[in-house]
Every structure is written in C-alpha cells, then in structure tokens.
Amino acid sequence: MRAPSRVLAAQWTTVVPVVAVVALIFSWGRDLPVLAVVLVALCLAGAVLAAVHHAEVIAHRVGEPFGSLVLAVAVTVIEVALIVTLMADGGSKYSSLARDTVFAAVMITCNGIVGLSLLVGAVRRGVAVFNAEGSGTALSAVAALATLTMVLPRFTKTPGPEFSGPQLAFAAIASLCLYGLFVAVQTVRHRDYFLPVTQEGEIQDEEGHAPPPGRRAALFSLGLLLVALIAVVGNAKAISPALESGVASAGLPHAVVGVVIALLVLLPETLAAVRAARRDRIQTSLNLGLGSAMASIGLTIPAIALASVWLSGPLLLGLGATHMVLLALTVVVGALTIVPGRATLMQGGIHLAIFAAFVFLAVSP
Image (cartoon, rainbow, N blue to C red; front, side, top):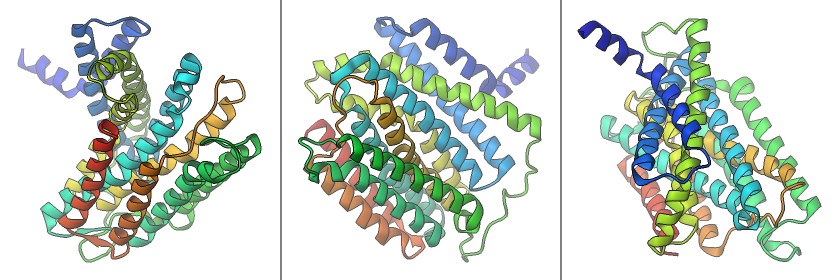
C-alpha cells in the first residue's frame, strides 16, 4: 500500500489540474450550493499549487528570465479571456471590470508580491539583493503603461473616465509596443539585467546544482501548466457569483469581487515569487511581480480595446482620485526601493503597507 501511496503523492501535480478541470466542467454556469463552492475552492487552491510546480519546471528548463515570462504571459492571457467573457455576459454592469482588474493586478504585483518577496529575502539574508538596472527598467515601463491607459482618460476632452475611439486605439498600440519592446530587452538585448545576483552582486548560476529537466518533461509541464491556469481562472469565475452575493450581503462595494478574483488568479505568481525569494533569487521574484503587472496592462488593454468593437456599453478606464494617489505612491516608493539594488525589511514592509491600504480602501472607500 505504501508504494502506490508514494506514486500518487509524487503525481499529485498531474492529477490535481485534471480534477480541477472536471470540477470546472460540472460547476460552469450553475448555481452552486455552499458545499459545492467549498469543493470548487479546494480544487482551485490545488490547481494553484500545481501551476507553481509546473512553472518552476519550465523555468528550470529554459532559465531566467524566460521562466518568469512564461508564467506571467500565460496567466495574463487567460485573465484577458475571463474579462472579455464577463464583459460580454454582463454588458454595462461590467463596464469598469477591465480597469478594476488591471489596477488590482498592478497593486497586487507591485506591492503585494514585491513587498512579500523583499520581506522573505531580507529575513533570510538581512538584505535582499537584486539587479537595479533590470528592475528599474520594468518599473518605469509599468509606470508609463499605467499612466497612459488608466490616468490619461481622466484628463482628456472625452466626457467621463473613458477614451474616444482614436484615443483608445493609440493607448492600445502604445501598450502593445511598450510591452513588446520590454520583452525584447528582457530576453535578448539585456538579458543579464534580469538574472538573479548573489549578495556580492555577481550573477548566480542558472539554477543551482540540479540538472535541468528534459525536453519531454518540460513540454509535459507546459501542457499541465496551461490546464492548471485554465482551472484557476475558470473556477474563480465559477465561484464569483457566490462571492458576489456574499459581498452584497455584507454591504461591501462591488469592486471587492474584482479584487478577490484578481488575488485568486495571481496566486500562482505570488507563490512562485515567494519560493524564489526563499532560494535567494530575489530578481526572479521581481521579474514575476513587475513582469505580471506589465503583461496585465500591455496585453489586457489592447485585447479589451479590440473586443470593445462588439461589446455593448461603455469602457471605463480612468482611475478615481484615491487610486491615482495609490498608483503615484507605488511608483515613487518602488523607485526608491529599486535604485540602490538592495532592500531591507523596511522596504518590504512599506510595499505591504501600501498593498494593505489598497485592500482596505477597496472594502471601505
């Protein structure tokens, strides 16, 4: 009995994504009782852990910064599909969903993931060390993308927090071009800027002493990663009506639902970033956090702009005053954190405090 148990334990990352997809199939489009919601949530959590495992296998195979890029893009593509689906089904009810989701992703990644990673790294080594050139490049791109797509709509002549048609087209093209340029810089022109460094500032070995997995194992993990991510996003959508009713019953703002779903969708990246920080690979954690923020804006806005051709209702992208302040604070604090190339517990705590303020103001605006 022990041998089969060991085999099952060793293969849980293969079994769980499939089980989560089966749960998604049976729960999709149905009103779920409380017990079913709990079971779907458990499947979602298992799929998150499986996604982290398979992302790390792929990262080990292809090396940095490609590994973190794979997870960031995969999650964002599926997140875009979820947003478009909800906006198509909900009409004007979800006119601000793209903005709320993207901004929540920026706050979660730039403050939650970055802050937690710096905290873990500083606790282990006293000082978390990373590459200031690469991280600074990523942060400046996030700041530019966020301003062009979510701040400018409040200051144009178009009524309301939205772009006109030509303005939206420009924002979409600019976002896609900036993201494409960043990927080229990250993976080709200045790849060494995005590699983990030692406490002395030297580039670390690609992946410790363990040999990389074979090509077949990496492709198998890539397939299961996509299955797990589909399960994560799909099950998050499946339990969203229950979340929505719970939020309404508690008298909380509707935006809380978007924050909760964004947290669920970004769990794989969060766990992967923390695990990288525990292995003293802080740059990998920052690649995941800032790269996910950039992918969320750079891919979501063009996709939503294209989808708006056939979607009914307005597309509200402009942030409110409170969120603009939080975005500006995030950029300023992020710059001060990254410039030295070293961070202590203090910097991690500051980013987590900003993230806590975002969550609190989402609950109590």
